[in-house]
Length: 310
Image (tube, rainbow, N blue to C red):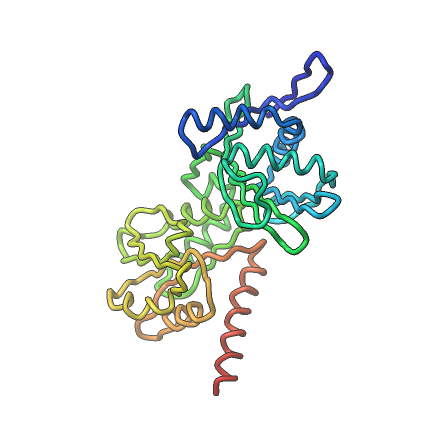
């Protein structure tokens, strides 16, 4: 819990401290001093405090000519927050950019930097990653909020999964072939659900092959051999799969179904009547129905492309 403190001048300020990250000790100290001298330091703290209390994973600020619109991402959904005037918004962004070591006057080019939020009483720490970039309407700033020390869930029980659901999941995970989709809202528990679910599999008895984009690491489970690809350079995993299948894995693990061609190949492997594989794949979705729709959608797009080529 984050408490407020009241100063003698009746200004109510959240009991959180903001620290600079990314530079040397003296550089970070200079940034912190410069940020404290900006008039909008208190509104900046209030924004961050409000977002953390409401369990927001992201803050988005859209700067137009006259105002600044804000949104919080909570449980994978965006929620509008109070609009601020442009002068206040500019000052708040100046505080954040100063702490993150970004150029305040640069409003068009994409910039990214980090700062730290610490609660004075509980000592709970959060890392804020600030990304700013020019858009058609002005400038957009997104702040990703991540707890520095997250709870490490070990079992499906600790995730809050009901016993009946656990039994059904384990039954599917032990099947010789088929597809198991693990879904969670973006930025709201997917990594924990993914890793705990994989730890409940029989990795000592079967060969597991994992494939991940090196920029989107999710899997931290022993006895799963991970092969990475560089999605930023245009590489897609469907090109790697035929070669990887020569190792004859029994279970294929994909933390992100990123394109239709990959989904098509995985369906083929899972449905092979002679050498069928078990495919465990991750999908960012609000619920199971949306996860299925997303997979069916990429399959439908792939089918349309194939038909048009013929």
